[in-house]
Length: 373
Image 1 (cartoon, one colour):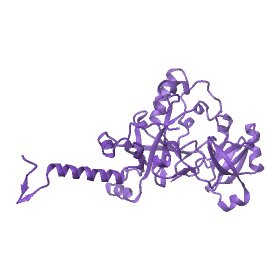
Image 2 (spheres, helix red, strand yellow):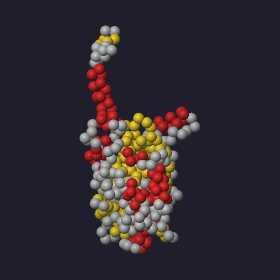
Image 3 (tube, helix red, strand yellow):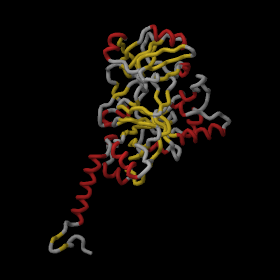
Image 4 (cartoon, helix red, strand yellow):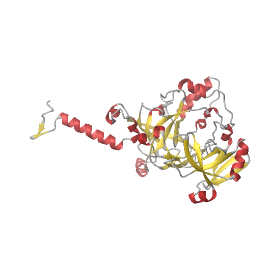
């Protein structure tokens, strides 16, 4: 058939060349409009060629969310939640406080003082107070202090987390004396101040496509992990005669029910949606229409230090594991050749309610992840 000159009822159709060109233009417009700005980091590859390389999934990959965790005070014990709010800074209350050295105002973590993991955190029944406890001692502070209260009652000081200079509102001796005594060093509790801590490395504005800030995590607002991966790691540990460990050691925020270990390595864009399980198909469709998905950019693998060697319930640090086992097979990122990876650093693109039982759907994948420093 001569497709170049075919006509119907006397009307000559556009040539095949023109049709193909039009299709390319339309496809490029769709991708430029709807593809996540995270893809801009692959500047050497055109949007269209990424499509043909399988970046956009042809099959649905959907996983159930089985746990949500927040760590209100950096490096202290976390809280498992049934439901919370996703905010642009991460999950509500996550790492909005941290301890700093009393003299230098540098951040203090489990790396320097493993006893920090014995400081328990909880939310009061009315949701208004954060409860910090060590042994029988308990300190209660406002979980949502107003800027006016902070300015009137606390002192705004410069603080440092890694190479980032930012600020925090410092609590007084009535709070700090308990924890300084428990940790065996003079520390000060601080609440994140007003200065934005703009995301850097794999989420710097020119790669992420927007300016976004966070509170006191090491790098990114969210860490997503899979129970399939911790299960696979534990199988290796137990084969070596070691005890299985909990995923809490890796301090993730969102834990999903995976069906294959380490499949999260290639995620690029995911969305959180309500579960499709309803009594009738019409109810499921209605629920899906009402709830807007929470879209998340998965920006990098998480290169691990030896914090996971610390058992959260005892603060005892294992001399070798799981570090040695992870080093034997999880040095999988070109940008972090001397550290193993577990979990995925992520940045929310939208806000909303999130709860256990909702679903995480993978929208796009990539084989180009590389940790930047």
